[in-house]
Length: 169
Image (cartoon, rainbow, N blue to C red; front, side, top):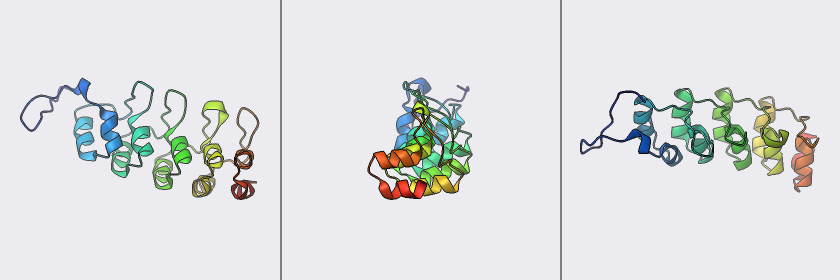
């Protein structure tokens, strides 16, 4: 932490080690989060499970805090404790605009996470057609295989998303 001291509106000092920064990111309160970033907290700060502030903000579909964290240098590919990236989380959730933000900030669409899955594997597994289209348009490899040798089309087919499987084949 820096030597900056933040104070409440009553003038009381704030214990920076006692603040739940991830809840602030989740809630979308960019002004409050910015004050803490200016006080020296790491934009790539992780919680006990390894989730970064950016992953939490994006997973909560919070544009203001996602934008702020990316502007302040948060790693768009910073994995959680299991190896999932924020883009993989967006692919699962189907948050196309947050995924676009991450891609614009340099997130890699072909990065592999747990089990060798890419963001496109997640989009295919959960039937996220618009997300899959965005990822393919941004260079996602439709032939990438996970650790079991399955392509995104295979996962789409296995999970009952035949239209998406056809688009990925």
